[in-house]
Length: 287
Image (cartoon, rainbow, N blue to C red; front, side):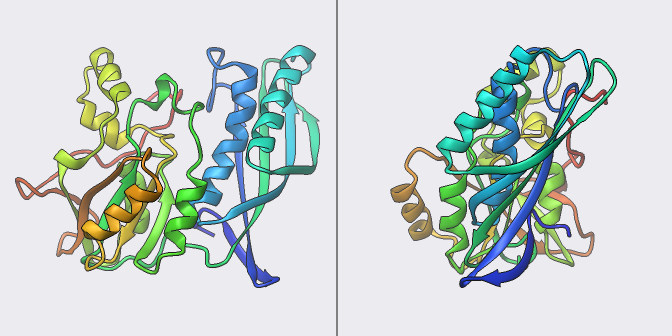
């Protein structure tokens, strides 16, 4: 427990990896998200966990909990989103369950099984390792929280490289998630000019009064990969190889883990002062 997937007894030279995630109305989506996009999100948020372990999805089981007032048309569109996404990523739904909830409520849960030759865990990073992130961060509530692509190819690429020490997918913001791969007796020294702040974070900041950088740190559901690379291997060659294989996916080296007396904190590399953003954010839940 604690990693993005459970790792169990090897089979046919591969290890099975298992993950489960839920999707609940009012928590993970609301009425502004179509039923089709909600169904797709349920599948993709689970696939993102498989990506974070460097795995390949194979099959899943689905549980639905529905209020009696839910419409058949909405459910058909929800399943269309599920079916289309499963076909896109070669995933089979092999079973599941359905149950009831009070009127006005809807929740779903997916348990997904995959395989990986060598699952990349959250543990394994060392002091001196470089910290990288894919894509752009923040403002996902505007659209990205459901309109994203899980980084499956990128995750397998990283898991196959010994210089990648630890990895996870960003679901609660790097302010929270970076703690999960931080080595003992260390802190993270971060280069703020390299944090990939999204345009949506900048847009959201105009209405929230927060800085775009705070959104990049604290907004959840980016579904990007956050990983540690051996400091000696985190060089131009590594980044050039990434660029050659994934030219459309931005890669940012945002800092490194350093030995520290005050452990578990984030330090601005330009000022050597602690950063104020330490809490992740849950969408659609009041702060």
